[in-house]
Image (cartoon, rainbow, N blue to C red):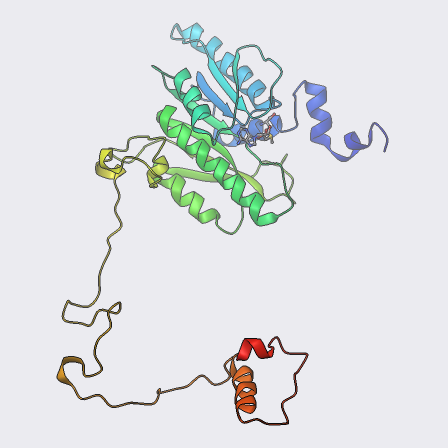
Length: 313
Ligand code: SAM
């Protein structure tokens, strides 16, 4: 294949090289911004799953533009960008880089530590697993990346902040939307034109971060699910307990107990089952067994069945 064939096939790949972006993904974030204005007033941002770094480049450019505008008004705080990926990333000016797995508690804690006394205005996540080809598995892993990103976000995003993340529009996507709506009143699913139509990838844009009243981010109790943790420490909205309802009062027999046949003094009488199975899978085995017991010379072992004499004796 010639050197130019990918350039011919993929205009965004070509444009990315022309404009100095590390990956064609840069256009996805830029196009999302054109529609949803995700960079307005942003000075602190986190880029999760950032390598090779084109989204971080976009963040650096946009946050610097914001800084210059804010300086003119005399109300500026210098930009802060933290980028994280499993893979090492070449350095980028103005971007703090961490190497680690965002689903790992240690990595999450390192990111959170960078925002010790401050909060982010924007968290973006373009996380995608190495595709295995097992469709359901890939979708599952991608959803885990999104939930890990959302959990980190609940620790560092300021109220009113924005979260943007890659999402696969697959079977259980409504579950993810529902989870996001717990924390954001505005959740949009966007598809930039630089993202191929043949791909199930899309991007959720979640605005106006508003955690439920009393919600406390917790690494061991992410997103109000109950992973192993000291349950007693959780209170209020963080301690959701699903009601356990027992149906039937205590005068009813206990299904785990053995009772005498004349239960509660009532005389016992055998009854046939109301409806026996019509064509049970064990019928053939039973008839072979009956033939053998009757000493029938007609008993012939059938090689097509799964049974042998040992099975049915
Ligand atoms: N937004 C990036 C850019 O514009 O250059 C491209 C991101 S690329 C599509 C997806 C990235 O997700 C890969 O670099 C991969 O290493 C990263 N990734 C996948 N799983 C991860 C995880 N568990 N923790 C951190 N990064 C992860």
